[in-house]
Each structure stands twice: as C-alpha cells, then as structure tokens.
Length: 421
Ligand SMILES: NC(=O)c1ccc[n+]([C@@H]2O[C@H](COP(=O)([O-])OP(=O)(O)OC[C@H]3O[C@@H](n4cnc5c(N)ncnc54)[C@H](O)[C@@H]3O)[C@@H](O)[C@H]2O)c1
Image (tube, rainbow, N blue to C red; front, side, top):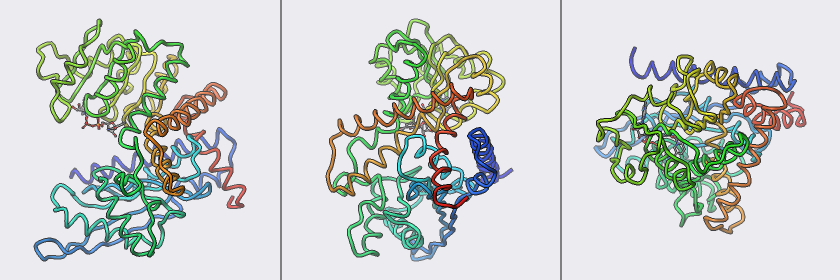
C-alpha cells in the first residue's frame, strides 16, 4: 500500500475511533441520537485550491482544508498543519479533538483545524510566504477573530503565523492580531507559549500523582521518547525529586532501578533526541515499558501500549504525552487493573489553553508575564484534571471516556439552548 494510502487509512480509523468515543460519551450523559448526528462531523469542512507562483516561475496548485467542528459554545479554534499527506479526515478528527480540549478546559470555543498539502522542507521562504498568504485569502470568508481562530500546528512556525496575520489584516483593513495565535512576541504573541503544552503535561501529572496518593519525590518514572517533550519531562521530574529509572528513543532504551543520570543523558543526546546508542547496556523499547516503575510517560509514538503488553505494565499512573499511545483495548485493561490513565486529550491541553490566553491578551491589548501565563495555565488545567477525574469516579468510566464526557457536556447543552437539537 502506498504511504499516503496507509496514512489516509490510519486517519480514517482515528476519525472512526473519535466518533465512537463521542457517541459513547453522549450516550453516557443521556443526550439523544440527534446530538451525535451533529457532533460526528464538522459543521463546515472547506477545501480550497491555492495557486502559487514558485521561484522558478512555474505555477503550482496546492490544496488546503479547514474543518470547523462545532461553534455552539463560541468561535472555533485550532491549528494549521503544513504536511504533504494531510487529509480532510485528519483535519476533521483533529477539529473534534480540539472541541474536546476546549470543552474539558472550559474555554469559550469549539474546535477547528486546517491543513495545507505541501512539504515545507522543499520550499523556499518566499514560496512559503506566498502559500501562507494564499491560504488565508482562500478561507478568509469563513475565518476571523469572532468566527474561527487559527493557530500553529505541525511544520508551521511563528513566521508563517505572522504572514497569515498580516494577510488577514490587509484584507480586513484593520490590525487583527486575534486572527491567529502562535505569533512572534512583537506581533502579539504570548509569553510562555512555546513550552505551554509540555508544561501542561507536568501540571496534570502532578495532579494525577496527588489523586493516586503518590509523592513525586522518590517516585520511579519511565519516559518513552527523549526529544523535546520527553527530555523536558524527564528533567522536570528529576528536578522535582523523582527517580528517572528508564528512558527510550528510536534506537532502544535504558533502565536502571536506582535511577539514571538525566543531566548527563541530556548533555549527550543528539539533535534528534537519540542517546541510547551510546550505551552497551541498552534494552529494547518493548522491554522498557514493562519494567518496574510508578509513572510511565509515553512521549514518543502511537500504539505503544496494546493488548499484548497492557497487563504487564507495572506503573500506577500512565500519562499520555503523545497522541494515541494506548489502544482502546489497552485502556480497558489498564483501567480494570486500577492504573490511573491521563488521556492524551487532557495531558496535552496546555497548548490550546495558552493559545486562548494569547487571544485574550490580543483582545485586551494588555500582555502578561510568563509567570502570569503559567499561573493561569495551572489554574485551568488543575480544574480540568479534577473535573475529568470526578466524572471517571462518579460515572465509573475510564479517564478517556470521562475526558470525552467533560469535553462534550457544555457543547451539547449549548446546542440545546440554541435550539439546534
Ligand atoms: N514538543 C513539545 O512541547 C511537546 C509537548 C507535549 C507533547 N508533545 C508530543 O510528544 C511527541 C514527541 O514530540 P517531541 O517534540 O518530543 O519530538 P522530538 O522529535 O523532539 O523527539 C521524539 C523522541 O521520541 C523518540 N522516538 C520516536 N519514535 C520512537 C519509538 N517508536 N520508540 C521510542 N522512542 C521513539 C525519538 O528518538 C526522540 O527521542 C509528539 O507527538 C508531540 O506532539 C510535544
């Protein structure tokens, strides 16, 4: 099967899995089938053709998408990814994920997501600028600070956000920093944005430890993935007094029950987050996941905890710092064994919260310090964790389903109040 077809099939199944969970969450909360009919697809999905003059004088036509899942609570909000294999199914599933994150953190938004089929690594800065501006012109009728707020996502950067904001401001003939988030600081970006997602993981992890009655100081932790996210989390936990007993990268894994020297490993890792190849004692990733520990943090790849190894995981808490590391069946097995699973939608919600903060600051024209951003982030994520955990306990459901329930309750009630269903 061609790589693109495989990716398309994978994305379709992500979409189907998301839809199944939405259905289950709505049923648990007693909402009628009509709510699911409206929430199982985006309210709007736009496909656009963007003709761009390339540096060699030729014209290439790019395809872009924008999915707006649901705007009952407020404008939609979500990123734009620049990827050669982005599909309408992918942006649809991601827009639903954004709705859930906005819902469980109680933001006044619904979810949106966009994408442009392109490989930014093969394009010049001038071509990327023309493409970024062309995408904004193509979707300008359906987006805007009070309709659908764009943000940064995969392979996009702050410069692209700046070009897009500038293009929208030119079209509307007024300065519109609230059109997009992830901007450079001097154009209305927010302090603390870059670390907000991984900082958010540390906040929910801290709450999960409290809920499980586990002291972080002295806790044994395995982190799978030693790149930006995994490295940051290992360092944070190490500094908080935890013992990092295991780490992993694509080449293998290291484990020592007395703890690893995190600072040394961080110093030795290369730009891709690889370090285990330097050690003869390296074990496999598979072996690492089932070693003794209190906390396991998958921060590398999808489908790592499956039916095959879930029964052997020894951690009391699993925090999903990456999207989709645990299969549905494995979620069931872990939950039935009393493992506290912090699902990806909750663990990575810090990014959308910081994005919301950027827009609030743009609206106010008043900017917060990094400490202020983190204080507010802490507040919203602690509430989010506690809300999801309470639903899981009261409704006797796993934390993933509880997160979907928390993520949909307000949206479904807003749809009812508006008279849509
Ligand atoms: N960068 C962030 O702030 C951040 C925050 C939260 C979550 N995330 C998510 O975490 C994931 C990793 O992001 P990143 O920025 O750390 O990427 P990265 O490229 O910096 O690092 C990835 C790490 O995972 C390892 N890895 C990749 N596949 C692996 C596998 N199958 N088994 C074991 N190790 C493997 C790599 O060797 C590397 O150490 C992404 O899905 C991202 O969305 C990132």
